[in-house]
Image (tube, rainbow, N blue to C red; front, side, top):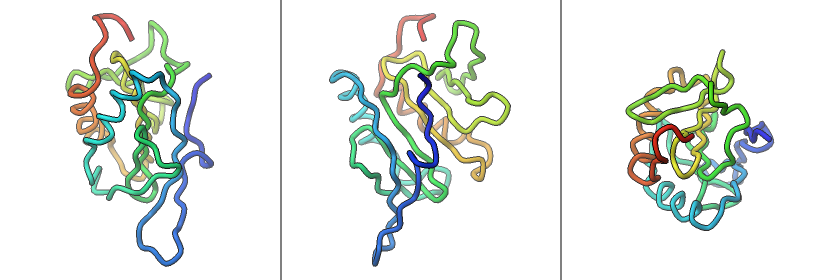
Length: 152
């Protein structure tokens, strides 16, 4: 089953009396080895992405992150996307293959070809997602081991 963020899974929650934004991001449930790799990746994420400041996520998780309003969200260790097929159109950015969903107006981007799937949701309000995909892709390359050639 394709796991996508919906308005209920990724939405800003205002905190009374506090200027910080909190975003609900449903954490994935990967195996222990994947969770460890993902925790290292998430710990190294930038404080700013596409000029949006990092937000607090709820429930707290080492596998998720968010920035800005509308929220840019990241989940590491998600299930293999149902849309990922041997003939899927992938977009390679700085050596990282990304699956764009939906193809005609993508907002969900999943890094594939590594030991963990990393899902990045970028609302269309931010415009071209390439700078975010490059920044996150560099960290995927650094923290998540690549699979042998041809494996997705």
